[in-house]
Image (cartoon, rainbow, N blue to C red):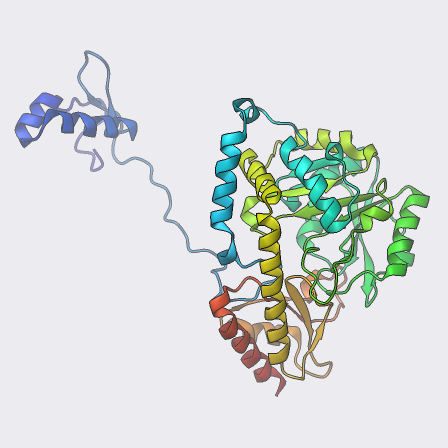
Length: 428
């Protein structure tokens, strides 16, 4: 059939005749004919001969192309946890328990806000772990933070908010996602104390107060208070992206900004840094005035996180396994950060608090530019990011945003030494 020797419509031998000719069981031929029919080569009909269903070869997919950006040998990309540390057994146990406990009716069309079981669990967890004022009725579970910021930007547009501010620097991806929903995106500069609140005059702003991405600073207490007060007085909204708030290494974690103004601050959290990005689980704790708008935006988006993942996460948190995993990860990442800092040459200046999954390396003012440093890293197959791509203005200073979590534990020493070799090459 593929060679075209049998044309479309031609009758093929009966299963009985072909089985006799080949000396095989008729059932074997019957199964093969059924497979060929399912694949589109043959057409079968009750009481009629089996015929060829296509002329020549079937359309073939193009050969699978190699990924444009192959995975680096040494993964020091920021914002990624150690995926080899994913708690597989605990997740399997949580999934099994969730399946046994969940009634069949729960697997129908779910609420736009997410599984009630997870929203109830998150309300308790966020209150004790991050100091969030959380009510299950005001929590919405999203399909990752990208989805969360998209639906929130759409909800803001529904309120007539035409401008959304981001920290400068910040992650370009999220700025693009927000801008695609309609609002104009503007920047507010960040210094060593975090967002310059006095320079903010937009009706909404996205901030990372616990651990600013990518500079690594934390929003100073006076500015936290000023931001909450200004939002309350002006009726503006603040989106608090608490992407890695569980990981503070030198002291107790800074509590959520949301507690200072629960009706003006939207709290956003995610399982991407604590567990794995592929789970696509994030959540928003909303002011009352935004719940219905976000519900409608969720409905319009047509996207939901998988119910089973939501139920498994709820079970993981309720069982205490999630907290144990976070504690283990915190200890491991604290150790990695300390080892990385101890190995760095004196010519580079690390910046940021002892927290999270990344740190920022400032290059010498009179030394090589960021592009030279990135090129040296690429030659050694190091996955890393530059600071310059995060600025909303073209003249921002350069640097290297180094993630110390993504590398598997057994390869971290090699990754660190390879980075040190690259830095010594360009600074000596």
